Image (tube, rainbow, N blue to C red; front, side, top):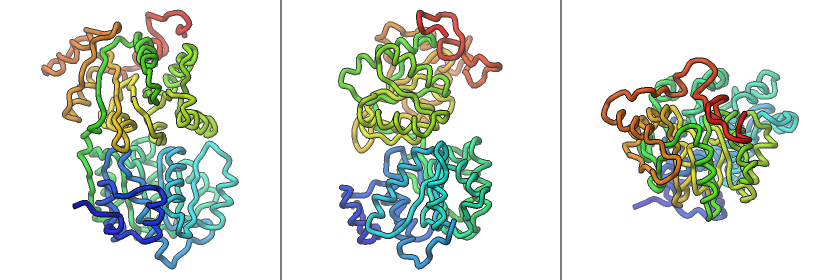
Length: 428
């Protein structure tokens, strides 16, 4: 029999907040994680995107800190939450505001891309919960505006990305300033082996909670692959978007910031409203793009993988992998953006000849073979044949995955700074 929020040990103020928000029963990750966090255990929590990870740590943290006599001193914090993107930091802040509405905890959210003075004013009074992106936090620490020697709880959200090579140095620098005696929580959609190795350096005798194997994709997502030549991908994207008569929200993934911008620009030229979201955009531009996406003013967003971690938008009906990721675990993250809260969704992947190895790796990880849609005018039999060669254990001729290439031309084609088949105003 499933437990209720009350049976998990949550306090009456939190139960009232949950009723206010309309939540009646815990998700699997919440049911498993909340009692362990309340008991003070270090934790690795693995769950698919959209399964309630934020509430799984926010609610017990609110209860622990509300029941403590300690309060943060000037420039200090009792709980530090590190997260990879500005949008995700803001959303976690919103969660603490909602769940903590009947308590008197203070929280502050700090991230780059905006002026620091309002953030400094908040920090000067001390904060119970500090939610931060690593870059801005380090800047503030170096200026003397943050002191972390009083932190009792550390949370790494989206831990696989936080501990990826691009973040590992910053994360380690921050953790080095924290007290050795603390509670540490990892929450993430996937746990690759290198993350597990690093977690052993940071966590103390952790409990691992896994709602589903990290390679298991969201069951409600209808997954499909289109074999297509690289230079035909944009035409295929246009065709699919114009056939999306129901007007649902579509999230398109590109491998690079440059490609995300170019796809968005060319869609707008074709009278298809679209916005690009990535780390080079200002905070104002990203916030405006997300607002337009939520409201339906823009029903298409093109994002890089890291930026998409901060996109928590209801009603995404389609995820389109314009370019397949070279890490199969990333595919799980991507398609988890649709089919949330029990809704159904669709994931469409474009696969050119050089990406067939990526598709093969994804299917091995997920243990699922994607349905192939051959009924489109841009179908590439050559790419499909290469995939069959890989399935037979043979190396197909002429396949060169983009991340293995040398030099500046990573794959050619309209969205890779080169190519042979430029058409009309898509020529760059």
